[in-house]
Image (cartoon, rainbow, N blue to C red; front, side):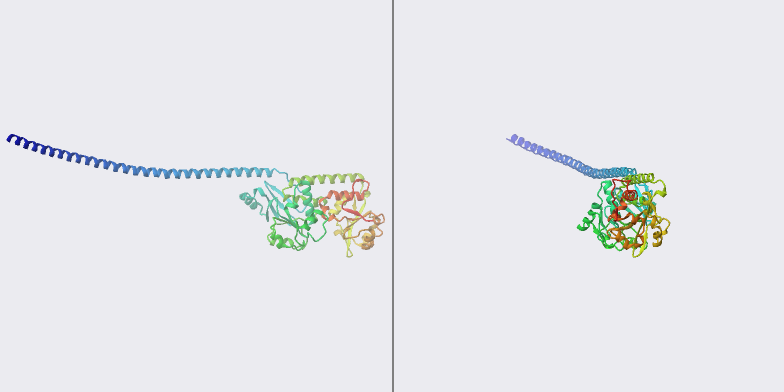
Length: 455
């Protein structure tokens, strides 16, 4: 029993010792585990720091990639703009080369306007001495080009062509544009002409114009010597074409209003073709240079041919009929001057002017009476709408010509109603009329267009 008790005590002691040993081992293991956990935690913290740094690097890379993409996009846009600019420059260069190669106008007879071509632009001098720079409308966005030529020529006006909003002063300008329409197969009056000074102040012998004025498709801007400048300015024209005369205030009034006014004084030219050549002046503003030049050359050639045929008919000057050309207003005789388109036309048609030695076209009644026996043809320079309609009425206005050879032989003529409105635009017909009058057998199939025989 004693032994059993001893053995049991030893067992308990051993169990306690074993438990203590186990406990110490467990504590040691826990401590080691804690140490490992601490190391693991440190490693995790290191990894977390590394991940944070990596995240920052990635975020930085993403931002950098975004910046890079934006830079690439900006570069692409810049390249696209450069390409577009190069394409525009090439297109503009092509346009400049195309325009520069187009047919050009030459001024042969007119003394009161000039034109010079410089690359794609035209430099025009009008009858008032203005320098006008005409720039193709297709190049209007090329500011450097416009500035270059403006600096080179210092123009009073820069006008972009073809013009699109035009105001006219005279019927002859209208007829010139009508002929350009006909010859060049374009529409000018309907699309570009806003109105006419003096539009409703006299009778129109051009039905189309009369109808457009009546309907309001063309506006009447008032008297030519005192137009409605406010109305003209309100219409915003890019061209106003006028004529001037001594003492005329209109040019300065229009200029002071800031309007783009140019002066067409074809009426002052001293030759038939010089007057007609102003059709080229108008053509410049519509970019119809080549067409106007070709048309003018055809008319010039025809008139030259007519002149030659007359020269063959009457080779000696003494064989050529003597022509008197005048009208009477309130007792004053108004005859064509020696240096005038009238004398030029008479000469081309094979006639001799009766008063070529009288300056300023002012023959006296005595001179006319003294030469009346030599006057083969008399042209009374007034329309039959406003002047004598027959010889009897003529003799009432000018009784001093009753003994003139032309009156006795009934070779007396006056202007047809549309002479002033259309005649300047058709000089070849004026010459044909005069040849028919002077040499009735030469142009058998031709009927008078701008002259009427008084009976």
